[in-house]
Length: 371
Image (cartoon, rainbow, N blue to C red):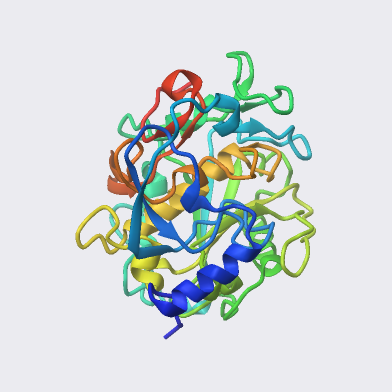
């Protein structure tokens, strides 16, 4: 079994170490509304390394505290700012397409159910079908959780905090859902501890598998590289994060940037979250809520990818935090994590930051009209 950091003396020691190297402290972030309760976390969004964009910090479930946003803070001090795009890419402007990759022979035998969801014999917790159902459901059932992200855009001035109607806004998933493809890559075992470069290479390999072999076909795509139980991608167990996202050309990736012949490739490092238990969201909304973290964390990275596809050319605050970072692990009050109902079922999600909330003062929302 992999070693997971839990609340306690070893966890506090890890927290202190990470805090020293992190430029962001999410647990002290500014949140919309008042009387918000947020779980204390071990590390800020960068989790010690620049390439870990939007890293979801592990929870210290034993220590929660209220955080209030001062009413007099100006919008410019809290809201997200447009980063000016990288390679002409700031946000996902078309309907988002999510490709989920189950990397490694460790996942075992794959079978498909009557709903078209893949089940894997090595997935004892049932992470895979739950993950697929969530992405397949985005855009269905009249869901407006994705609407929060559609207020952001590209093609505006660097530093802008709002978008005119004429700008190219973040796309909303189609009524067929955001899930565009699933691949069980059993060509070999997944690395026991993959670095960022290896994860980027697997995303590029997946692009080829799905025949997304041009920059155009990858423009609105993201690849969720999902690891089997017992693995430790990017040393998440000791570094205190649950997942992060990036793109292949980031030169700060551990192991270096990865060359793609298919244009820029956006991807997520998604560990086998049930291994981390409550540290990555198990039971955060529901009881027992064994898979809460799968969609809370997965939704966090999805929302940040479509609003900051080539980090940090999209939307971040003055300290580099993205829309999911500012609203992570809120347990009560405005923006609290909660269930949403999609055409494929009920799923736990977190809120994301909305610049236009509270007359432009900004805050965390779970629902928003589609723009």
